[in-house]
Image 1 (cartoon, rainbow, N blue to C red):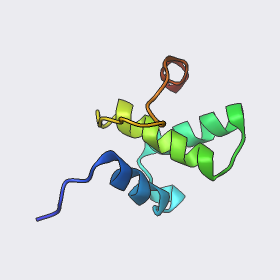
Image 2: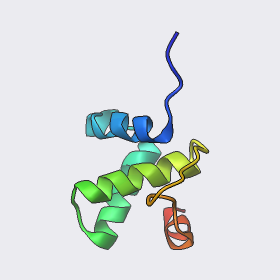
Image 3: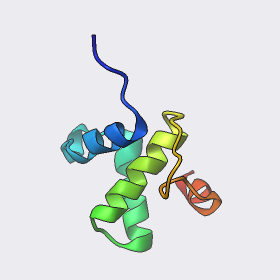
Image 4: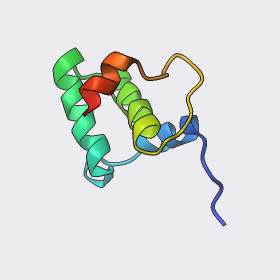
Length: 75
């Protein structure tokens, strides 16, 4: 039986996933956010935390908690 991941573990797993194997919505949002703020590792981490919070309904209780601005941009 596979252990249920918390949001930090899920983001770590997404960071290790090949681009073409990412969930489509996560991949689309990384591209979209990169166009807004530039491409770097931090952009990927932020995008994956946002994805987990909005799509997977995971809770985040630290600095990567999604802002209203990014919620609006996610759509």
